[in-house]
Image 1: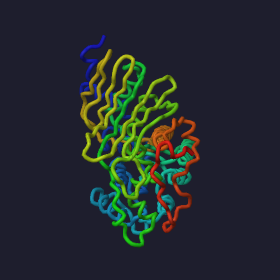
Image 2: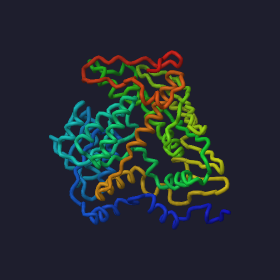
Image 3: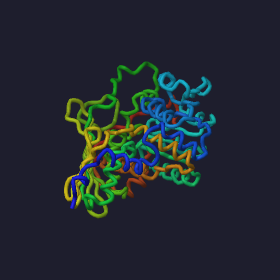
Image 4: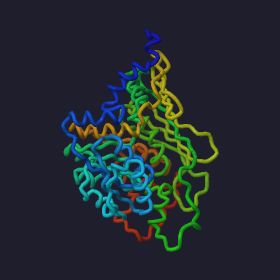
Length: 436
């Protein structure tokens, strides 16, 4: 029988529980003393590969996570992106940014130059198409890694990542994934209860990622004369499936990851989906809405809805229906809760330490302790579950996990060069676009 004390988490209980679940650290200030106590307080050099907004934010969080870390190298295909990122990081972390001009690398090979520059830890935040290549190179170079989600845009990329993850384990390399909600204290408390059986067996998971347009494609008339296909697509990377994976894979993958988490990271058997594009886009080839139905081995179902259209109702939450109750993941909209036989409401501070910050706190703590985190398997599996849903929507076919994993469709061009011709693949048409 539940009591009132079972139904809510007091701030005292929150502090006790989060200390256990958070693993390492609730605030950056705690980290240095623990790191030094482990006898591993030497200077760590950080390299940033991909200098957009997410990369700049991740680098700032890494610099805040550990007293003895400095940024020494940066790489991007665009110099203006790199310089803007460098200026922001210098402004916010003046004493920790030690990037000399000869350690600012530009071009498609900038990632390798960063890896060869003597860094110890790298942040991989380029468009998703490049992450399998960059992850493979980082592991080969023996660098500890923070890698944003998703980790690939196609099955060949996922297969490469799975091999890199195993190599990272063998080399004792840290690999923290950018599925930030897995590092959020309120969500850790909720999902621990789900996985411990507080709502019974999960039978249905329903997640949404309904939002506005993320990066609208500019009209072709805005393309500067002489700009190559590759540069134009890289500057508008979100709108091309080979670069972003489409909105389901690049953004709504968070909702897919919630589903995977609640389902104990057991891969779904198959997916069937609908999707398409209703708002015109001149030059891109991604859908602006999806609805994916995932089937699990025990007959459980997962549903993920995604929409990226302006002037529509937005929602980014998840509900998990179990045999003994219902759990609600409210994302940024509110506090998680459980109803049913054993009710519970999260009543601690809302995201007391930024979940993006906790990712880096725990990454560096694991490096210092000599017990590196490796999130690689779930990073690959949640990314593939999203890719599987996209494949089902693009083709109109039922796509099994094995079909998705073994697909021979390579979206990312091999041996990409700056000036090559790169025609845009046509928009997928369900029922006509073939599964490869």
